[in-house]
Length: 83
Image (cartoon, rainbow, N blue to C red; front, top):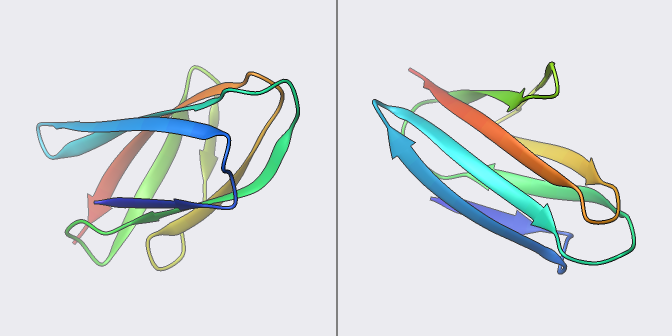
């Protein structure tokens, strides 16, 4: 359901609950990883992406979004499919 490109040092895990998907992504190295692209391949024509515990949202276009990771950064995304 998910493709991650541009971040060979990013480990991730995704699960769903009640029609909403959660993604935890971790930069496992002591260097920044910028321009990591995520592509959601699940249902819906697009998705809403909120970054939990950081107070920000990311605009997804065609179910794709890009984010930056500082060294050892952890991001937790809440992905809601939009019909």
